[in-house]
Image (cartoon, helix red, strand yellow):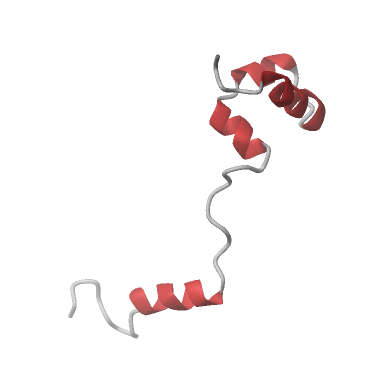
Length: 69
């Protein structure tokens, strides 16, 4: 047994996403999950995440070069 619920995946692909059979069968399981909104990665960055990023990588000051001079 493959572990995939093929009838449910086919319904989601054909009916939910309106994929043609040849489009559905060319997808990898990861691509299908992404199209269905599963495993879509990290959530959007919020203000605290942006602040942490700015603290870790501050902007250079006027006239500062990459070589430290």
